[in-house]
Amino acid sequence: MTTTATRRRLGARELLEITLDAGTFVSWDAPVRGAAGFPSVPEGYAAELAAAADKSGSDESILTGEGRIRNHRVAVVVSDFAFLAGSIGRDAAHRLVAAVERATKQGLPLIAMPASGGTRMQEGTSAFLAMVEIVAAVQAHRAAGLPYLVYLRHPTTGGVMASWGSLGHVTVAEPGALLGFLGPRVYSALHGDEFPAGVQTAENLFDHGLVDAVVPPEGLGDYFGRVLDLLLSPGNGPAVAPPVLAPSVVPQAWDSVVRSRDPRRPSTEELLRRASGNTVLLRGAGDGAKEHGMLVALARFGQVSCVVVGHASGQSMGPASLRDARRGMRLAQELGLPLVTVIDTPGAALSKDAEEGGLAAEIARSLYDLLALATPTLSVLLGQGTGGGALALLPADRTIAAQHAWLAPLPPEGASAIVHRTTSQAPMLAESQGITAAVLADRGIVDVVVEERPDAAKEPGDFCRRLGAVVAVELQGLILTGAAGLQARRARYRALVS
Image 1 (cartoon, rainbow, N blue to C red):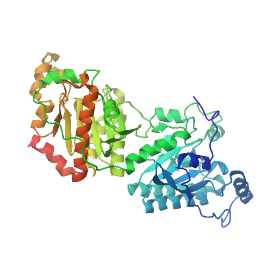
Image 2 (image 1 turned 90 degrees about the vertical axis):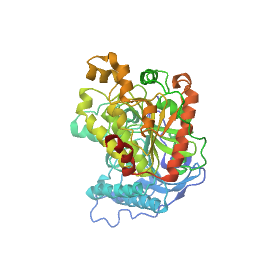
Image 3 (image 1 turned 60 degrees about the vertical axis):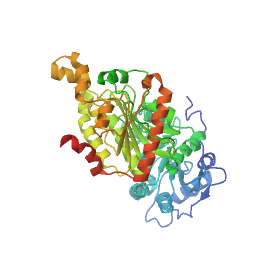
Image 4 (image 1 turned 120 degrees about the vertical axis):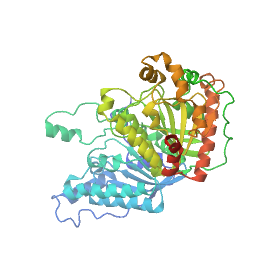
């Protein structure tokens, strides 16, 4: 693996040159005040600033402006690490906030590319407190529904990592970059020991779900271009195919259960790979507790962009997986995109860690957030739909189901053990519980049942494309009609308890 020790670190202007479309960058930077006007600064600070300007060719540690990525107009803020290690003082903070506010006023997505040791120590507490104003500006930008994309460069630490470096809708990192809160030099000075190796690296943060991808600088324009294509061209073109009518043959419940467990059955990942025209996989909720039970992505079905949250194939679902799902819900809400949830789970994790991690509470919060979303929602029953793990992703404005998908409070074997004290009655109990897609459609919970010919495991490519076409049609319909809202979503289930 190439590390920062062997990879030449690009300067701020070099990074802008290879990321933005050629010749499109226009600077927004006004002259800075420098050391003048400070009530008290260390002796020699003015000379430090002058030396930093000579070394870097910049007048401050932040450069701002606008340009284009894949012809999408964007605002950019980039650290110049050569200027006092990219540290943030009064002038850098003022320039940064001004650029964020200008981007918000002009309705532009914002690309942030920090590389910084954090707060500028020479300016003391006033520089430290500037992080509050920077976060407030980013908060207003996101509240306006505008994308905020972050590229964490080597190194990014301290107050920058703990503020505008960690607030991206999508966050990616430079390979081998040192990323963390407390820089290793400070840790060593305070604790008299070296910080554990391999912790504060881009790759380790990716493993823990703290960044979405590790991307080399030369690939950044393409990566952000794909994200911007999805976020800035959400699409509302013509439908690609009519919805597929309910199959004429209604399977037995146990037959569907068996077919849904076939390891060859298409997964959420395969559905995206075969049916989405553009997919950017995201990773984790940013809380450091990465599991592998949930997939979150930006995707496009037909002409419509959306956020996808779906169960990962064959994985039980713990509390961290649901926090991943809720991250996807927040993205859909903030960016004004429809949300697609894909349900295919053998159930929630049953373990000490899951209980102590708040699994039940996370299921409740997921339901709470999903019901309240102000953006259109579509749920897809793809395969197994077991218990609270399935329920957490189900409520939506519209629901479609694969022919052999099902939904039940427990695996049929577990329900049989409770009712009959044996698992042998699972087939009979599954039938009596009304778990199949056909029964759910009769009860108004499922709107469209997509045929399997004879089941998805035997025709994965065709089935995924057929299901994807239905998703595209349903999304287009939801875009035209808008989100149904909490009361309409409740009405779908109210009759079941009346």
